[in-house]
Length: 193
Image 1 (cartoon, rainbow, N blue to C red):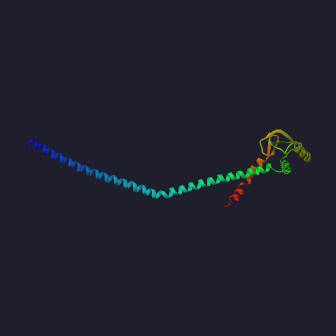
Image 2 (cartoon, helix red, strand yellow; image 1 turned 60 degrees about the horizontal axis):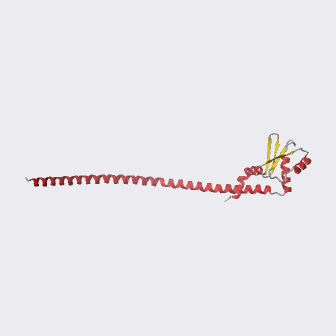
Image 3 (tube, one colour; image 1 turned 90 degrees about the horizontal axis):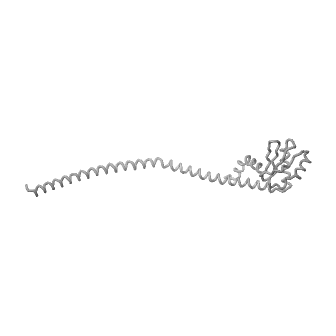
């Protein structure tokens, strides 16, 4: 056998081995691809099944969250409107006609006085409840109430101090107290649907 024949034979055998290896590798690649594709399909099917099971629950939760958000916004608007309504009530109390204002304060004072020797505090911007008013009250009720020089940050009305006990008859406190009592009823009337 000649050297050229040996080379040709070796080349042919190498080519045959290469083709065999390539065929074997191709078969392995096809098998791996088939297994990977099967695993991918299995994972996709599992996720699709899971999504099918969980999607209604996810949608239900989204609806619940959306409803809660809507209720929260609605409540905020209602609270704002309630605040505005009570602020308007306070504004109307401070804007009462002077004679009604004083009569109302007289009634409150008559109910709040315990000893007849208390100290009366009025607001910084008080126009109607002054020393003349208190002198008139003292004369008609046989009391010796005194008007404090100290002014409080209240919008109207007064605070009556008996020793260390304060009775807050300010318009702010009356509105806050009324709000606590009637807010539920006001909400029902304003927002009945």
